[in-house]
Image (cartoon, rainbow, N blue to C red; front, side):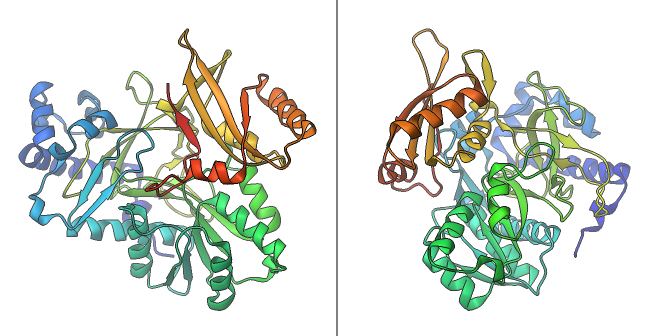
Length: 429
């Protein structure tokens, strides 16, 4: 298993390396970024005074709002040198264009190469990609290019189409699948309905994207358990975003997503912008290393998690991120209870009576949060309704409003035209 040398170095050596890269980045931004040049001037930042990672705190952070408003001012190269145009998913508002140069595409391939290697992949594997590779989805091209650099085989099957997925699994015999974990549940259901023996397939593991499969103690959550109870495969959790152009992927130890310090500087910050100690929740804030077209400095992702600094048994000395507990913008305060959508999704996933769902959060006329659960139930009966409400009462101590819809209606709401991943959370506050 390939491990970059820097990830095996001491904490001090890693920090020294990143401080050298930070100096290069600050000079590059001053010379090439219209946005950051202005940012430094407005906030009277002398880049020569930023010598260590700890000095970063003197530079104000940047959020997605500014990236949306000033999108092209973040571009550091001439548009004629842009090789690829990707966009964010638009989950938190208007999609943002992220431009990549040839150098950035090479960096992206390296990122996924070392990520797949981190998750135990090798040139002996065959990967089946159960996700979109079009619609300006950066991850799709990243996975494909990373697998090619790894030297493994790859099938671009695309999202959905359970019958086609199984046809390829049985015919070509991939060893690893890359998929949204909730889709693996649908694959299991299809196999059971069509007498496919899932205990005797070539698939040995799954790289899970877009959804949590673990609790904060790194045990499998409801979704992870539902998959592994039926299908004897190893699940690897990942975390990434288009803006950071980097992924955090678990190693076989399964104790958090590994940081790649040659690609990213990571800070975990409290609401006041101060660094939090290990084990305490904070917002993931990143500074890219080696990005040419649209590098970011102290960019707040909005994602909330904790981090751990103990050396991993795999030999890496990099920090590890916990599962994402939620997004700062998505925090819900409902009848005295504070929660994030992933907690609600876990509760709904544990109910056999709930086949599909969408969470809608709105503000009432007194400014507090309201929750509407749009649910496709296993049966439109009073008994199922009572059971769902009883479970919500037991686990949340409150019962949100519920609207029961058909599967056809739910799927249309989840996948409107032009959307590349299902919408399961809607915030109209």
